[in-house]
Length: 182
Image (cartoon, rainbow, N blue to C red; front, side):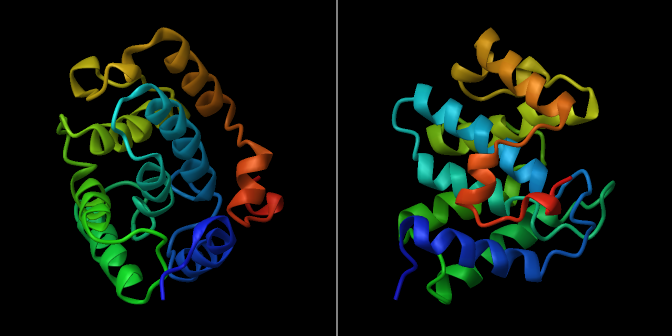
């Protein structure tokens, strides 16, 4: 049985956190995931044929299996394996081709590629726009979507990242305790 919709998000979040090996308040932790989620939703809303639900799941899962905050060249593939594991356990609210897209987005997100697939492009751009948490702007040549080039969208992502702000509504939606993030 597949997990469904909003009710499944807190359960999925808890499963993800149970296997997360890095500091929860670290640079790749839940606050980063939620800012990637905010970026991804904004990008998906402006990108025809992007699957916003897959982009949202990418935000939660893409760095969830990191074992090092700095150098971890296999973390994307570990995240993709985790996606397939979660799917086999019925914990994801998507299936079929959408699982394949989510796994592909996770597997290659850190390899410095671009994608013409609207959903994968939104996933990768959402993460790259969050480089602002490190006071770095993304390289334009590594942005996949037209939406990621929008100055207002970039400005919003920059402001969230440099200030380390997380939307409290997203925190509640995903079942994260506010104290976990600050």
